[in-house]
Amino acid sequence: MNERFHPRLDEFGLVARNRWRLALSRPGETLFQTLAWAAALALAAWGASRIDGDRIGLVLHFLVEQPLATGVLFAAFGFAMSHGTTASLASELRHGRWGATPVPVAATRRTVFLFALGQTLLGNAGLLAVLLGIVAISDRWEHWFYPAVAIFSIALWIGAALGYLVARRREAQPRTRNTRHGTTKPLFALPGLDDARLHHFPEWQRREALNRWRLGGRLWQLVAFGLLIPMNSAFWSLLGLLLLGTSLIWYGVVLRASEDAIVRATQLFAASPLPFPAFAAASARYPFVAWVAVALIGSAGLVLQGASVVVAVVYALVLALGTALALTLTWRYRHRPLTARIRTSAEGAALAAAAYQLWFLVPFVAVALIARHYAVARKTR
Image 1 (cartoon, rainbow, N blue to C red):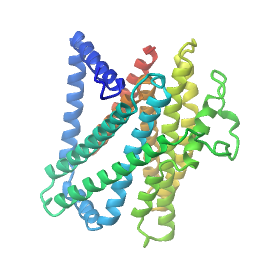
Image 2 (cartoon, one colour):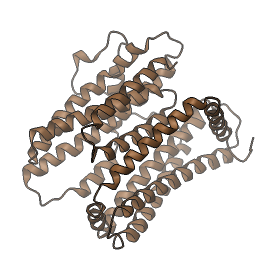
Image 3 (cartoon, one colour):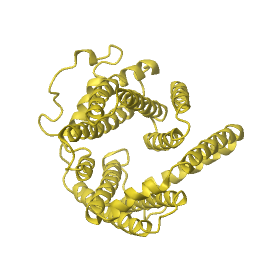
Image 4 (cartoon, rainbow, N blue to C red):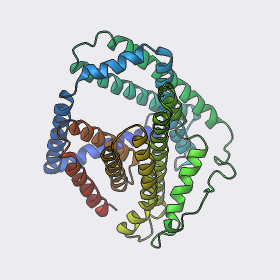
C-alpha cells in the first residue's frame, strides 16, 4: 500500500485488475462484448461522418466570437463537474465506510486532489476529442478550432479549480445538515404515487428531487441556458423555449435524484428478500410521473415555437426511451452507479449519432437495449 495516498486508491486499482482477470477468464463473453461495442462505435462513426460539420462549425464560430459568455458557460461546467466529484469522494472517505480507517489527512487530501485532477484531464481530453471529430467532418475549421480549444480548455480548468477549492473548503467545515426547513415538502400531494410493494419509496425519490432542486441543483445549467436565450425572439417563441429548457433541466435533477435513491435503497435493503420486479416497478413510478409532466410541458413549448404536433410526439417518445434506458442501466449497475452513468452517456450518444441516418432503426435498437439491460438486472444480486 502506498502510504502517500488513501487506501481507496489501492482498492480502485484492485477492482480494475480483478475485472480485467474476470474478462480474460471468460474469453467468449469478452469477445462478444468487444465485437458488439466495436460494431456500435463503427455505426456511430458512420452516422457522424454523414453530419455536415461546417454547420456545427458555424455554431462554434459564434461561440468563440463571444469569449466571455462562452468562458462562463464552460467554467460553470468545469465547476459542477469538479465540485460534485470532490465533494462526494471527500464525504465518502470522511463519513463513509472508510471513516474509521486511521489514514493521515495529507494522504486523503492528495487522493481527492488526484481524483479531481484525473477527472478534469479526462473531461478536457473528451472535449478535445469532440472538437477533433468535428474537424474531421468539416472543410473550414481553421477559423474556429484553435480559439475554441483555448477558450474551452482554459475556462474548464478555471471552473474545475474553483469547484475543487469550494468543495474542499466546505468539507473542512463542521458537518451540518444539508437540508433546510421545508425544502422536501411537496406543494401538493400525489395520491397514486405510493406503491403497495414498497411503501413510500416513490415519495422518497420525490422529496430527494425537491430538496436538490430547491437548494440550487443544476443551477449552472440554468445560468448557461439563460445566457443562450435570444432575447429578440417573439414572446410566444421565447415562452416556449423557456418551458422546454427549464423542464428538461428540472427533469435531469429528478432523474439523477431517482437514480441515487435506487442505489441507496439497494444498499439499505441488501439483506431483505425483495423481488426485483417489485423493486423496479416501485422505483419507476415517480420518474414516470415526472416524464408525463415534462413531456406535456416540453411538447407545449415546442408547439409555441412553431413545431408540429408530430415533432412534439416524437420529442415525448425520445424522452421516454432515454428515461427507460437510464433506469434499466441504473437497475443493472445498482452496485456500480458510475458505470451506469458512463454507459447511459455512451449508448445515448451512439443512438443519437445513428439516428442521423438510420432513424427508423434506432427505436428498435433502443428497445432491444432496454430489454437486455432489464433482463440482466433481474439476474443481478
